[in-house]
Length: 135
Image (tube, rainbow, N blue to C red; front, side):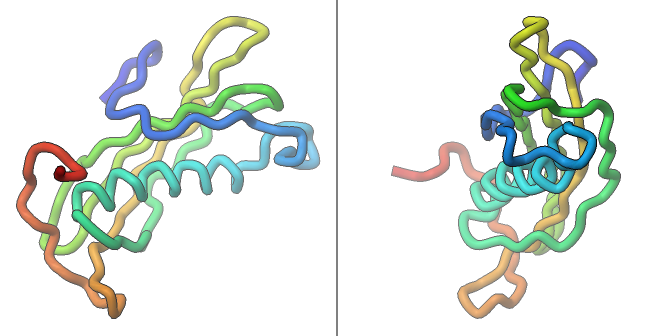
């Protein structure tokens, strides 16, 4: 969990919001933010599953504040739960607002992933080990 001043989890992704990503209101399009969160949480899910995963649900998506052009979107993610083949990945997106010099939480969600084999069929999530990728 985080508080309103500091993100939790692992800093998984940082990207600058560009003018090409705005919606009709001039803010960054929510779908763009959602896609960045899916990329970041997919990294964490694949690490935990030690292989291929697929997104199966987006739960409790909450847009808190808008992201603006020039903000750096920082996505933090961590494994919240692990089932037989599924995982819940908690994600928080924070915007670094250069003009004001602050960082604010802008979005949060829980994404559910399923570990899959090479044929796209569900497979068990392996036991957790320290250090990934392994040398």
